[in-house]
Length: 99
Image 1 (cartoon, rainbow, N blue to C red):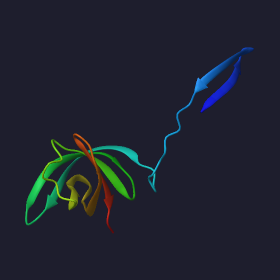
Image 2 (cartoon, rainbow, N blue to C red):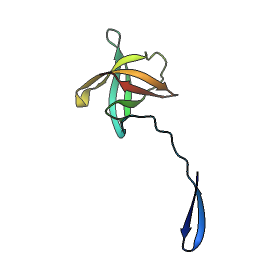
Image 3 (cartoon, one colour):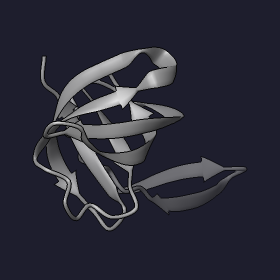
């Protein structure tokens, strides 16, 4: 989308990229240690990068070996929430909270 504005009597065109937002709830920045827990005591450490009422983005060493469903544990906030993976990138995964 191209937006034209008049700045001090000079026309200025700025290209604006509209991001297609698929989230049902806004996320806020967050930076806390977490743990991906599954299967009788197996776990991976992670960092929770952002969080909303419906999901989170987690930073991991590698997404390899992380199952589609697990429990996200954030000990500092006494959070234990079941999750489903909705996307995976090189060192991040996006999860939806299953309540």
